Length: 192
Ligand SMILES: [Fe+2]
Ligand SMILES: [Fe+2]
Image (cartoon, rainbow, N blue to C red; front, side, top):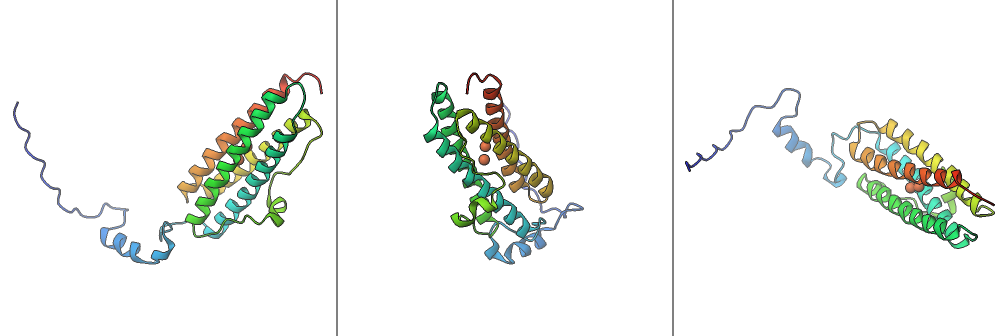
């Protein structure tokens, strides 16, 4: 077998039209280094993005609490299946809260976890529900609220902050899954 000649090291090339040249990129990276992941090319409105993420964070925590309440209180014929669903959703909402908190910190903000103002800042409500069916219905409503608010946030952020957008899209897909689970349950519901 003939030996392939070694590839020649590429020479530094002129900047591609429309792209920032090497010198400027390097100089920009040295400015405001305390901002960490937020560089001068971040073009979204950072204060608003952090506020929106904090509103979503409050919503997630209210959902975690509501799902745990329902998980412990569920009783009746279908309780075992529904309880398992409530527990799984509680854990998934907590994972969403984790994603949001980490992103808020990356953007230079602070996650607002003050329990005194949590329900007032949340989009979804903390509804206890009288029986199992009520609980499922309340959760479906809360999920539908979350879906609409995440979709709005995604549209607002657009392509200005693709990392935040990707996180929100990932959460939205799971909220849609949650809503679908409950819609299916209510569809075939028998009894109270
Ligand atoms: Fe969630
Ligand atoms: Fe959800």
